[in-house]
Length: 410
Image (cartoon, helix red, strand yellow):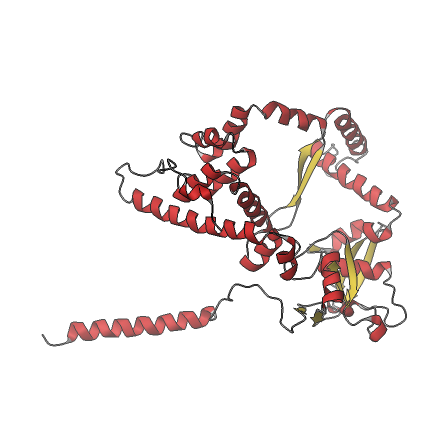
């Protein structure tokens, strides 16, 4: 795929970090430029392959999903690559600066959010004397868009939710403007003021703690009032063997909930217990009905957490699919149901794909030619233990050779 930008005259860039006589700096910059050229070749391929027929041939719904699955990159990174790849196709000067190593991928990500063919040269000039951490702000100041961005924030509520690294706590942050913010504050403070005094000190606890508990209380009340039981019920999984031994801890999704916590929320009418055997099996309804009852669908959703097709993971507009079709004798049990998004559900039914294995573990997806769908990159070869032993054998031979040479007669 040719790009005129690669041959435009007068577009000669030299990295601002090199050619200053510092030891090895030129080498570092040259290798970085080589990396950029390789990344640019990948981006060219992304723009070439990102079209409906090619995506369908590779059983993916979008280019970012394809990159995440076959290359093993984070979905967020994959989406960023696709955005930058398409932007660079329209920005010849930025493309050449990246190819030469004059700007980094992190800088290009920022530039591609704002640049156009008319202003890209001016925005590139901003990278000369500013660290990458200040570049986005400098670009917004140059384009005079900060005011409109702030105005948009004042008019629109937004909230982001993310679990911390060990998935022990949910973090929330966002903005709720104007009267809506006052309404939320009033509701939280109203519920928080109903909290009892601390039983040990006889005093009210920290307002921050009470506000957090008030938000949980409001969410719990909303779930209890939701008429759609299928979407507002939490499924708590218990291991049958643990229950026999007196251990009453359970799992809600990937979160371990201990006995005291379960007792605290046990009065919530939207909790559903599920008893699992050692293999993870939960009771189904067998051949009595093809329709999946709400309680069983909740178990399927809780286990799969989205479309199970390799690399997909979509959580919206999903279907529960019978691996062995009910008309062919397949039961409506947890071990015969798997979650698929609409795209991959149609792929299975219309393209002759097959799902093999127990969905409680790691089912295999087999295409119409009998090949298992796996990442295209080669798997890691030898086991780490084998590699270590091979290295030790090589090192031993090397040391023996050195000793033999040192002790040989002159």
